Image (cartoon, rainbow, N blue to C red; front, side, top):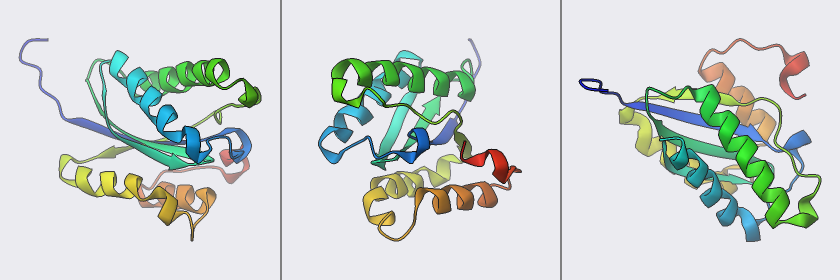
Length: 150
């Protein structure tokens, strides 16, 4: 698109189905790399990916032509298929149905990168559920707790 310029950063957060600890430390780097590859095939750039056994954080720089919903749908769908193929022992693996996506100002990208890099340390003192609720509140996202963890 001629004369179209953008700076769109999204911080995407989603967990494994029922927060099961599927993403063992010995496979996490392969999983993160695959997620980044899926993003790249959609025209996005994975700036930072990380997480722990039961959830992932993905900081994306996205083109204006692809919606956050489409990016997340492809990232979750393609990676789920790949995990089933590459790690047959994870036949029960799945991602949660929903996700959180939060816009990030270019000036805040370094802080979000650092936050994602420190996930293991961060989750020594805070659960995924506590973290996720804080994100929703910080970004003033309305939610119904009855459907939050489904």
